Image 1 (cartoon, rainbow, N blue to C red):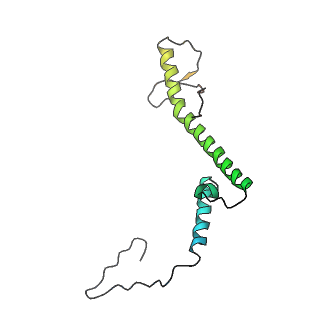
Image 2 (cartoon, rainbow, N blue to C red):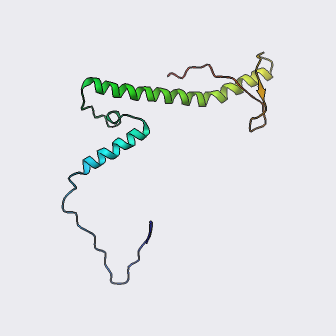
Length: 127
């Protein structure tokens, strides 16, 4: 037997399941440990992920501010990844139409065969 194995029963055979007489007493401790590991892997403080602020005010504020810094970094990185290709295409098109005279370094490495400029998008990532 292995993962995903399906057992077929012979005619007349019955399934017997183990009975659980009571819930596991330490289930919440186990789930709390798992949630702490998951929130740590994702980079969000445990208190913010579950909205459980059992500490003092300063510790709770520190957790909220740590999460806000993480989300700010992620938002800025996403905005740069999403807007940089659009900005490069816009500058390239304006330059090719002679509507913009910019000294840009063009390099023919775009997957579509078009030249791609090495420009940094100057826009803001804030909302």
